[in-house]
Image (cartoon, rainbow, N blue to C red):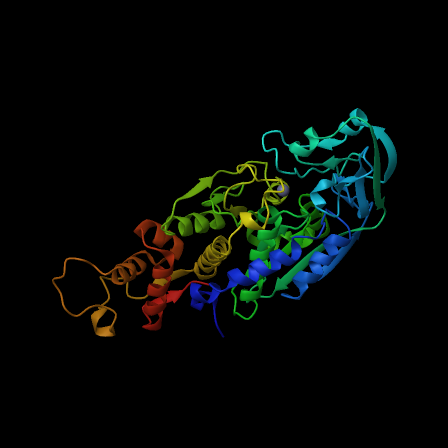
Length: 437
Ligand SMILES: [Zn+2]
């Protein structure tokens, strides 16, 4: 059986095209935190991995929150004084304020403007706005269009339903050799937005598919949830198994051209924090590390003090720090297959560290073992440079005292984890190391 450590990054390299295809399919769908678009999205992901789809009824109490009513839209438009449809949800689903209730009204321009949202600083873009928890209606449009509106009577039609139904989420579980789990979570509640939302769905789906045939030390749980309310719902329904989650990452904003950012878990020094920082350090590219803050995506819930899970967030440009964020400019042209693939490979590298991070005891601790006679060491002496592979073996032998993990050794030696892991495998094969259970 193949282990994650044996999966070469090259086997993930072709995933960019598939991830882009998934994003292109999902882009036109009007998703929200509940509703038909969310279910349609889960069905599409089900073509990649055998997702379990869960429905939680509206009104269910989840800690301090309640599962909201279900929102579905048939049509939404505004007809201007000229009799022409000037804003139409069918043209772009960002035009409608999410969770708008049904209306059929005739209003003046100034009355209409109280319900319009635009972005003066980016006059061509449509903003993405929501009103999940306060009953309201509204439309979003470009500032250019806003400026062109004439005085007169406007007809507003929103044919939407906001009633008891359910909140939908998808879950996929891979049983590993142990019941200890790695959690990978993404939000799926945004409509036509690519980097924020769809890129995370694509990377996590590709990762789940790649891990499925492998022999894995950890069990893996993949969550496809609506942002915030979804993680609160999942945690409330699964409190009894939360203690199994040993490591986790929130996956989002992984398709833009920006550099990778790792946001530490609330704990700050958890194994996932050290694994992610180690991988970024040896990635050969610029990257940023940020401390935890109680703002962002679903790590806010996983890292709430009552759970305090070791869950960090690995993204490219953080949310809110690129102008296209939550606008129509976060479209298919804003993401790239290369960035998606690079993000996927970085996630796989972090998981390789978690899977391979074990402790060993040196079985020949009195002076150095003779590596040459075991074919592990060069036979010609006198060279100035120590090959990194040999250096990794010396470090592993020296620090394998049953206490240091391979990640401790890699960090202290300043050697990439994968090389340290390979050194430990070679030394184990020669009976120089024994693994500490
Ligand atoms: Zn968002």
